[in-house]
Amino acid sequence: MIKGHFAPFIHSEKNAPFIYINVLIALIPCIVLAVVYYGLRALCLLFLSQALFFFFDYAFSRLFRSKTINRDYIDISSVISGTIFALLLPPDTSVDVVIMGVLFGSLVIKQLSGGVGTNLMNPAIASRLFVSIVIPGKLSGFSEPLDNFFKLDTLIDFTGRHSSMGDTARIYAVEVLAGNFATFIGIGSGIAVLIGAFYLLFKRIVRGYAFFGYVIGIILFYPVLHITDFINGGGFRAFVVFFLTSGVLFIAIYALGDFTTMPMNPLMRLIASFVCAVLTVIIYEKVDPITGLCAPVLLTNIATPTIDYYLGTLTHKEIRNKKAGDAL
Picture 1: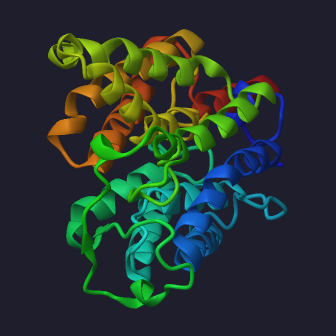
Picture 2: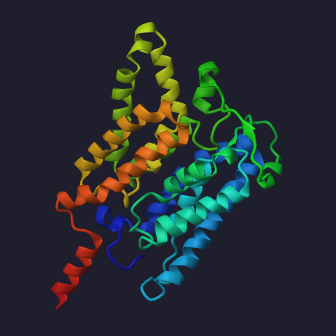
Picture 3: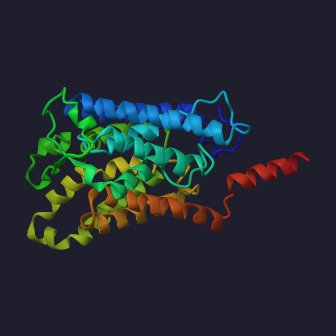
């Protein structure tokens, strides 16, 4: 257990390891489908990302904060960050992309801002957007699912593979539900994501303010922005496909459900997530899918300290200082 006043303990009586283990359990449906659809290379990407995130966080925390960390605490959040980052990758991603993304997320986003519970932005989401911006040419390998379970050559193809994402306008309803089309390895199936979301909500691991705020924002604002399609009769199908396959459900629960990087006040968490959804709908079709999903989340993360400050919510530093003053 972490000593101090880190974000998960402000929001819940459950300790951090319990929370993170349950988040990992909730991710199992997405992980299973990733491996079923994209075989051993998906499993390798997941394991490498998890292991590197854990190793870098462990090493950097002891390098930068050796006198302040609790050496008995195992940071399971690193495994969660590694899992989410990997699930957002195309199936034909090489290992150098994983190393670069994880290093950025662990060192720059997480450790330089104080480590677990104090990072300004979600490390996995920031890592994914970072590699998309820095090396976009190496993130366009979208081979078809169920193509070759034992395919591994893409892991060491450092030139980058180039193939298009599946055309969701032509896929059948069953494929929409199952996520059985060429997309990122773990976010295409809305059903798999919803299973995990319901598990976390049922177990009360995350509170539903952010999840429902984001989902309501998508449901309300998507028809407004695509009113012409709805008038012409094709809008409803397009909306259902977008809702279930684009990754917005994955973002709603696994990015906006993060305790550390979202507002502490429940109402503001709901409002911030709603605004995030509106931004997502506005920019999604104007940029690449990952930017459309990740950029609004990071903007919301950046705004969170200001929101908490003006609401009068105590920061971690203020809480520690107050407790130290009360002890004198």
